[in-house]
Image (cartoon, rainbow, N blue to C red; front, side, top):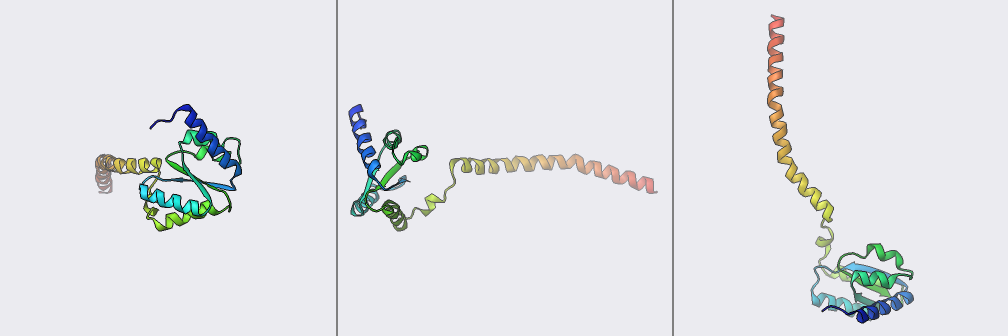
Length: 157
């Protein structure tokens, strides 16, 4: 469901107010998590005094603008969930860290970035062509070495 301008302004104001009072903030990618996992994460966050919000990145950038967390603006890309520590400065980081421990997200974290994946794919695609070129280049080289060996043999004789 698309948000109208008033709803967007309300969300930005709410998150900006929370950001202005928060001790610390964590942005984490939630791609691959089920609704049950997100519900569990929200429950843990509430229990530890952490404000948790899934918000569009453009709205998040506007919300943290002018706060201590404005430095996060460049990193707000992809599907992110924002966690703000309201009581204990390390609470948001601990909640996210503990959640990751209990869920198998390590394989997702070890995946290469898009640029790295493209680079790996290109190297795999380039290898057969490179091998063919070096094999074709070997034929004239072998011919030249054979002719040189024959020449050397005739000169020695």
